[in-house]
Amino acid sequence: MSHPDFKYLPRVRRRLFELVFGTDTKSGKLFDIVLLWAIVLSVIVVMLESVSEIRESYRKWFLIVEWIFTVLFTIEYILRLLITSNPRKYAFSFFGIIDLLATIPTYLALFVTGGGYLVVIRSIRLLRIFRILKLGRYLSEASVLTGALYSSRHKILVFLGAVFTLAMIMGTLMYMIEGGESGFSSIPRGIYWAIVTITTVGYGDIAPQTILGQTFASILMLMGYAIIAVPTGIVTSEIVQAERSQKEADLIKRVCHACGAEGHDSDAEYCKSCGSKL
Image (cartoon, rainbow, N blue to C red):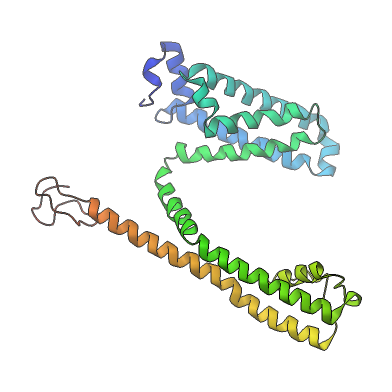
């Protein structure tokens, strides 16, 4: 175990710590896998309970199973607080907060009607699978995507502003052309129709009836296809740029300790200058 809290724990707590927090041992992996299945099953139970036909037939069993899961998750949360050397740090960590939220809904249902359905929050605990299956290396790819979205935020905001301006203009025109007889009873109602049309959703609850209105609607529909492609292109461009920058940074970091040569490929095993192992 390499966890910083591990060396400060007594023997019994150390074994429990290895079981609950450890992912490098068979017992720790087994505990986490069982925990994940319990989370999945508890969420499935809540989903099934929301179906009225199933709920009426198995109401008692749903209640029993839900309380079993709640008690288990409560014990697990308390156990995590007791065996870690810094309970406050765990309690206010990301997973600590999620673990606490996973136990609250069932107790909340005793006082608030429908509060029990909030147990779907437990599905967030499935993020532990990244730690269990050693998928942390894939988080770097997520950081590239996040960075691309952040870098393109100004362009996207300008784009959204232009789209909303277009929606306001078209919504106002349709209100003037069609009027309340066709469902365009106000300018906000016309803007709603324009947004639905631009995004190619097309609910169909409002539709132009006049030839002029249908002409404007046709133009807006064609524009919608072009508009949808714009943010995709912006983000894609930023992703390509971010990946290129990351590769360049990786090449700079690959330095030979023997001769000091730089610029090695990310998958290189030997120095291209002196042949030493990197």
